Structure formats: C-alpha cells, structure tokens
Picture (tube, rainbow, N blue to C red):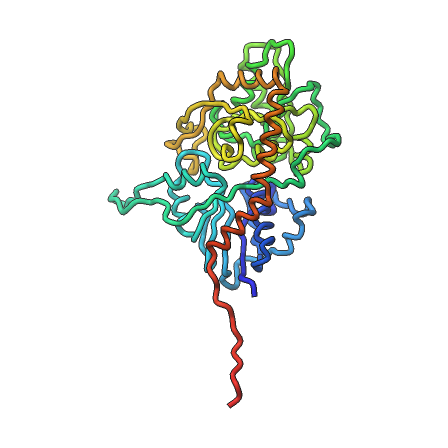
Length: 415
C-alpha cells in the first residue's frame, strides 16, 4: 500500500501560488509512489475555477477530499506562506516562494520550524530565511531566546511547462490594438505603494517610460498586463486612473502610448502574448521576487528581458544574456510595508538612469539583444523546465521521507 500524501494548496485558483501548486502536485503524482489526495484552499481574493477552465488539470478535482481529515496522513504538504504552516501528518513538508525582501517575519521562521522540511523557490529566498533571526521576549521584555531556522530548507525551483511556453509562429488570438511595431511588455500585479515603492514597481515603470520617450520622433509602446486585485471593471478603471495620474506629472504632451491588457488569460494565451510580433521585450523593475515565474516563461519566447538585478529571478536569468539594471537596497517604504513586508527590511531600488538607457538601448539595437534572448531561452529550456523540477522534487522526497510501518496481516494457525 502506498503512503497517503495529502497536499493542501490553492491549486484551483487563478494565482501564482496556484500555478506553483499545480506543478508540484503533478510532480508528486508522477513519482507513482504515493496515494495523493488534495485539499483545496483559497488564495487571497483570487477566484477559484482554474481547473475546470483548463482541461489539462481537470483530473486534479477528482483527488479533492473533504475537510476536516478523518485520519492522520503519512505525508502532509502545505503550499502557502509559512505563517500558515501546520504539521498534520507523520512527516510534514512546507512549500513556499518565501519573501521578496532581506528579512522574513518571525512568524515565517516559526512556521518553517513546525515542519520537517521546507522547500522554497530560490536561493535568494533560502538565504533570507537562514539569515533572519529575532529575539523572543516575554510580556515584561525579558529575552527568552533567539528565533531562527532550525529545520532543513532546500531550493525547489519553479519549472516552466515546455509544452505551453515555447516559440510559436501562429497568429495571436488576442485582439491587441497596438499601433506601434515595437512594444515592451510588463506582466504582474500593481501592488500597494507610492510611485517607485510598489513591489513590482509598476508606477516607476510607467513614469520612466513616459519620461524616456517623451518628445521622441519614433516611440515604442508599453503593454501593461496588470491588475490590482482581479478582473473587474472597477479594477480596470483604477489601473487606468493610476496611469493617467502619473501621466499628468510628466512635462510634455508628446508622450508614448501605454496599453492596458486587463483580465485573466489562459496559459496558452499568455504564451501567444509573449510571442506576439509586436511584443519585442519584457521589462520588470521589480523590487524583489521570491522567484519571478513570468520572467522564466517569457524567456522561452527567445526575446530579450530588461530586469532589476536582484532577488529570486537571478537564479535563472544569466546576466550575460539579459539587460540587468543595477541599483541599491533600500528600506521598504511605509506605503508598501505590511505584516510580511517589514518596514525595517530592504529590497531593490533600480538606478533611474540605467532604466532609461536600457529601454533606449534595446529599442535602438534590438537585433543584438534578440541574439542574447536566444541564449537565455536555451538555458531556461535545458535547466529550468517542469521535468527538471519534477526530477529534483522526486530526489528530495526520496532522500528525506522516512519509511512508514506497513500493515501486515497475521495468519494465526487454529489451535
């Protein structure tokens, strides 16, 4: 009999953690060593229903079991933020993207220490866990001890689905009304924070793009595949309002066009977007990533990437093959800080001059950077695929999960 392996995760949601969960679940099933069952969890305000809309994952719904559990599983895995980790099984595994700054909250460390092992997405995330320590005090302020990671942490990178993310030559089915022949693409949520302070740095990207190409005779476009929370009309209107507010701060009436692509797209549609003939490069001024999955998936289109030179995505993006923007670490701004993004932690602040120079350089000398994009695509394909991740996970599980006692039927002879 196979050991029971229950995975609690937001696998049926339209979210980054949902995508990560589906990949991990499929990889565990592929080992054919476990009796896998699933608990479906929510992820913030992101909608459910991903699996029904994507036939490739519909079978996962057949593995869902009700909660609460009626017996202890042999292996328990939670794919979520570590403060939610709860040991339920005989052996407990936490899976998390980790944190995007230089310090994890104390609750994250306590969560990691509850599990037998934690798998995180990048070396950046692992190192932040290992380097974060806190004093634990009682109600009178007396130090009781130091909170630090005491359980194993290993890196399980996020692999791209090469059957989905690849070069395609068929016309894009998306109706993208972009008049320019050259467009930069950004993909990610517009998160809380003042201009230059939101984690994905969308506000600064919009500002820098306007400033860089204002009054220029020949201008590229910028496509923002973004939203704040979801795909509602109110959300779209708020994004447009933010863009317009930034536009009003630029001293020119001759500005480049920014196009908003708002709403949920399938993986196939995202790949078509990446391969669209007018999309020439991806740009991300991110302040910090636990991994940066869209950057990996876009890289398989063989197009260049302009990106901040810090955090999780630097695991898979080779600086020799991409346009890396330098900068410095600065404290998380109060407008972006929360209980996870600590105000006394730091993340990346890209050099403003390098942003404009990089945008202009790729626009003027595109062929040079297109050749580099092809080299990054080869690296991504050969080293960071789902199959590579699957084999790594199988190795980690085999090395760490103990043997469980097996039930043996006793044949007692009649006396």
